[in-house]
Length: 497
Ligand SMILES: *[C@@H]1O[C@H](CO)[C@@H](O)[C@H](O)[C@H]1NC(C)=O
Ligand SMILES: *[C@@H]1O[C@H](CO)[C@@H](O)[C@H](O)[C@H]1NC(C)=O
Ligand SMILES: *[C@@H]1O[C@H](CO)[C@@H](O)[C@H](O)[C@H]1NC(C)=O
Image 1: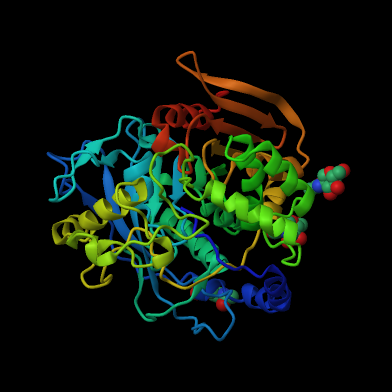
Image 2: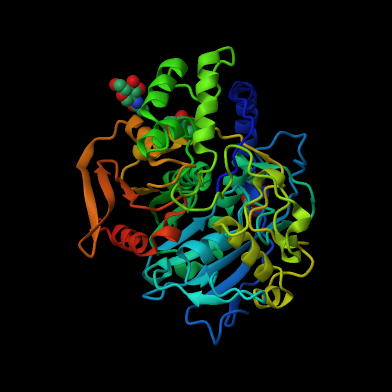
């Protein structure tokens, strides 16, 4: 999920960042020991899960990794070097050959969306049975298109205050992109140190949506460690991202040409917007009355569109314009578990609502927390996407990280786009990939599943594969599980899509 920013002042932030950079760099060098202080708590194997009948037919482990992150924050924000963050994770072993199969760390976006979203609604071995919900504990059913059929996958709740992750010492840490990346990097290293049997598996870092900002930074840190021999054991092969945020301003702007290309705007309005707004559809000069008028017409055109998937029936997702007013008291008692953020309140019956509701009931159940070995009284209420936690958007663009990574020989990347997503439209992803000036090895062609068209793909000399997934929304595997599984399985096996 993407948390849409109401206001994002790039200029102020850039100045702020510039001022910070030298401070951060000096801080960075001396921080490694404090960062890697570790307080082990042993991982647990989970054999049964409430809601799933019988023993789990796959290996699930849960646990916590202690990280300290924090070193990149301004001193005013609890930067006492003692942040004691405990990041919770779910680890599912590959159902094929866990000792050889790739090891993937998979991050759900948000920021602050629990990794259960990825596990239950996208690529994990069980799905939440949404249709069979009867008001009791939601049921879990096997997902035959789970990516864990061919890969070991770790689903961390990160950064802190996501899902079951918490801080032992500071109740009000103010994290942002930089700290998030730093603590996720620390998580990866420590997890591997704790699981030496997986050190030689091919290592990938992946995720979707807002993870598009964080993952490239983490990969850059890992590559630095490989190059400097700090952690020579890292067997990093590359990274993969779905409908990734790379630069939110850029993605929001691309919604206009995307909306036109998908039949949501008239030819006349689009032509007029191009002319009047000069390609700047957000943050345009407010004195530009013609652009402002066009922009209002545009808002009307898209106001009922589901941003996570433009052809889904119900207005849902976290829309650019304000969602219809809902009277909270008219909702049933179970909505207690829902996030209370007004601007991000999903609509009953739509996917986000079901996800928040069902996963909230499940994850807040005391039997579930016992089964998962969640530490008692560490998280008051589990919220799938915890948008109420303050967050600093301090990496406005990850494009230059992709740029750097594309120059590193021997690493691979898969960037895929559900082509019906309005939040991060495929056209904006394609545009930043084009801006990297990579040479093309195999040009745009359809890729197939069972002789059916499944999307388009293109490969680049840097090792970057791009693919669209036909008919898929923001979290592509949720909408097109079979196609996405095939795409993942082929790519991770070094086969052409
Ligand atoms: C980190 O700790 C190790 C051993 O505990 C010590 O030898 C090393 O000097 C420390 N490094 C820093 C940067 O403090
Ligand atoms: C990209 O690489 C250059 C050269 O190694 C480095 O100076 C720069 O900081 C890197 N950029 C990012 C975003 O990491
Ligand atoms: C890509 O090529 C364009 C046009 O030659 C150039 O302006 C731009 O700086 C290049 N970008 C990168 C990342 O090399």
